[in-house]
Length: 143
Image 1: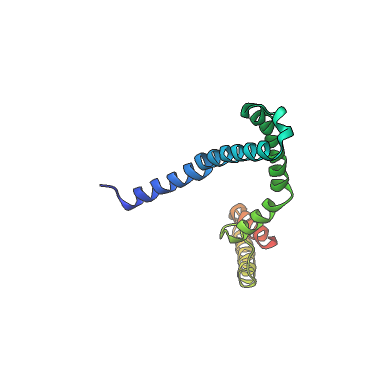
Image 2: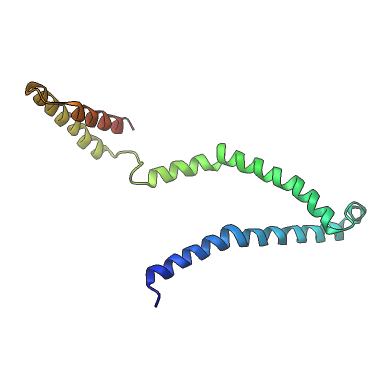
């Protein structure tokens, strides 16, 4: 009926839709209702400013949304995101720093490419691809 991969895919879709969207909005609505209830109940002078929840909601969103956008921007530009991106880059096998052993091996590759380039030049062959490969390896070695 359903293959395992299809069920797994549906599970991933469910998690993403639930956690990123529905649970987020439900949690935000719950937070607003609780804050309204606690503020009005424990600070009676606020009741004259917020006779109903709509007034509280509008003011809350007018303050909360810009505040969390600014905090998110700072987090993305200055706080944790740059550190997370560095960690993800180190963990990614395609975008990581070379080990000492790999640097030695790729250093030998540069030497091999230089020999191939000289041989190709002596025989009058096109060396553009060899030069391009050598430049890529040298960029890799720079890190």
